[in-house]
Image (cartoon, rainbow, N blue to C red; front, side, top):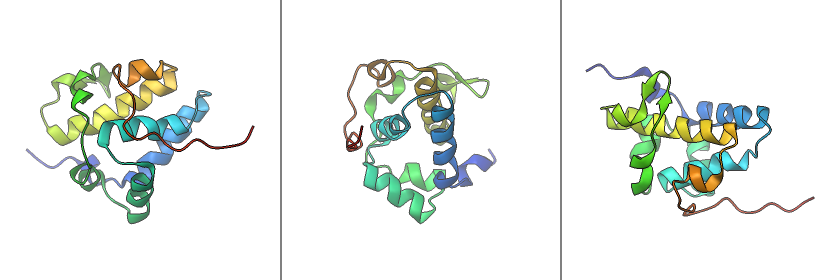
Length: 129
């Protein structure tokens, strides 16, 4: 099977698109990092380093500290494909991330997005108000 082009896309190109999508729907942009940290085990500093290093998606997922074992509970359609039926493990991980961000943008409850669990490393709370 030929290598998917998406594997070479830098995480730094994808992350701001996720944030923009969530903000456009009036949702909290910090939730993007919350769901990605839940999925991959990166903490917020690790996500920032991945962006700064220009890691492509293949490397980003290969270096993920710990994929969440509950990721297999992520189901539904992304880009016209059922995520639970995607055979390529890396492509499935990428689509899981897409699906989680889609759910944030739609306003789904965080407890439901995280499949009943809590994030292992939540982004730090920001002051203000």
